[in-house]
Length: 113
Image (cartoon, rainbow, N blue to C red):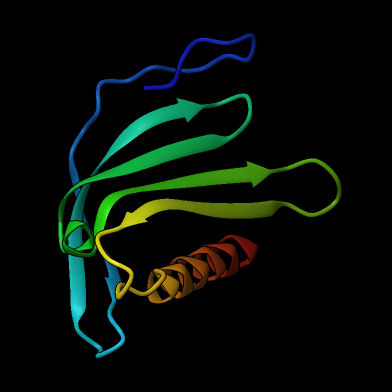
């Protein structure tokens, strides 16, 4: 969970959610169960931690952070992945990042209608 700091952070009990997260390089759909570890409303940040599923077959741990910057004329969305590979043979999660970027662009397109 997020620690209390000067910025307002909202602590919530982690809630499991099932998400189709990515397609592997062979085109196979992968699923993971994750929890929301923290929400920082002031800084517009959400932290997700994978607790079960296909991602944990490849990575010992996997955390994704979503940050939205609304300062200035344009909004900027930043996704950050923190992970530990189970072995050096495991690739970086590029297909997952591609999926998240496409999802973010689709949301933007929907909101601009």
